[in-house]
Image 1 (cartoon, helix red, strand yellow):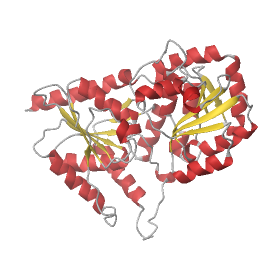
Image 2 (cartoon, helix red, strand yellow):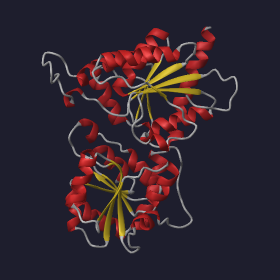
Image 3 (cartoon, helix red, strand yellow):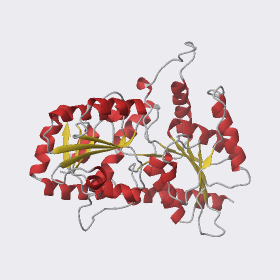
Length: 398
């Protein structure tokens, strides 16, 4: 729950997030902070946090489900989460629950049904049925865990009073795959709520921390260092880059994947930075680079319909962006004039040259694009008003 200074506050909301990395999920933190500032108490029902817990806001207290033995498998572990949540909900009055993605929505819906609490669906990742594993690896006559969550999502989405998602394209996919007519939907970017970052002078965070020469152009990729972000593919192309360009991969990844990058790239061209930092420090880190990279493989619908929260971090600091030529990314990056889109990693060098020739124009357009596409507070305000309406209606009914 969120520790607040408001005394006697009885407006309470529960967020159900069955992921162990809330510390890097900026929109979840942003929502909790926004609601807290408006006088709500927020309980976050989640699993034990494994990543970035130490960089969570200090006043954010999570309700973490205790670890259970590994032999307790799905769906018994899900049932345990429901029972644990019901116990934590005891003697508390909630205006509504928000379930994140199929796992969180499933638990929120069951607990909400038992407790008589309305549920909101917040979709961060698209679980599209054609992209999921269909059958269990152990018992081929059973659906896979992913498909069972998908079936649960379809049922639970029907009960949701409204949906929160990043944009209209993703909403169309989500409602279509859940066999639902488009319903009440709000569009909220997957970013923090810190606002524009315009330092008096260019930060030298990365140059100072890693000894990168001042005359080099720094290309930055933040977030997951894994196959989903094409990190290794981009790093390996640096052997063909100009010697005046330097790539920094900052984020998190499995040791094995990080080792593959280290073994196949030149340290004079590529820097791996895996020390996660606070949002305040992240701004200095991002602003000390020259161009941001947001590249993804076209391996499933969730990637192809990517909106990319990392682009919001780049735009916030006025950084031009190179992204894929996926429709949603083209709409944000190229239409705004804040960057360029490429079809493959081999086209990145040409995009770098093009951006550097008109850098100031791309730089200013990035700030404008942030205000247009990634202003969390402006996007979330209608959601907040709708949540307040739920509270008012329940009070009038009583």
